[in-house]
Length: 296
Image 1 (cartoon, one colour):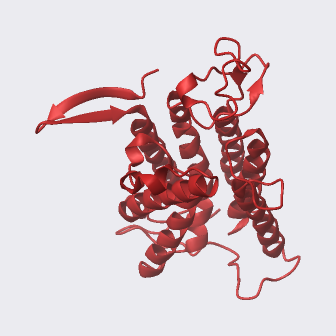
Image 2 (cartoon, one colour):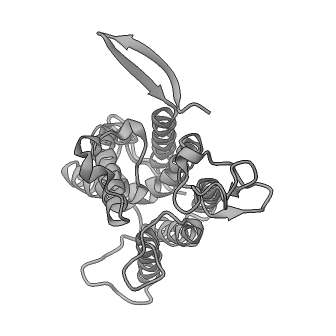
């Protein structure tokens, strides 16, 4: 499948619209729309989602790209060192969720602080929807022939052309083009994200008394971290942390899961984390000209 959806000429230059950019934009839009609904359901002014997005989008994309470039460079890929002009070429593919997450959370923190918003409410609402947005964008990896796993004989294995194979799978004598299939790791993560995000959104709505401020975020950290850590075992293209069997992404995923577990235990009163406090209920602020939604 051609990664370029269509091209056109503008001022003497060829402009390419790529499936990658389209699907990423679609994923962001769906995630924002779902977050808007969740925030409104909790009684907060949902317009803040779109206002914050004007900052979150460029800064998050920058973080996602920089993390991808750094991760690739750590893994021994010298492409970006030799071609520094390509570091910001997001349209060619190459974003990493963790970078977007890190830069996005920091940006959201300052936005919420400036507008005196309830950070717990926004994190609980946005966390599951980011998984759905990420899942929507994952088919772009198939179109770009990237983020696949090791060879497999399973019936859902996918074909990867010779130009996009990494070593040693680019040895077509050992791994024939017509008969070798690979794990679609991006599809594994897509399925995991849809299922776990759906469960979180459903459970938070079904049992609001059990999902007090911070609980959805904690479960998201546990589930997102666990899923990514397991899927990384199928990824042969990721650099290992020196002296371990873990990839850099696996290490971050394990830390995410551990942070979520600690957060959930603190939320439930098992122990306290210095400087971290939880409200019993969200601090609902009324939308302009409206009364706050009352809990029943």
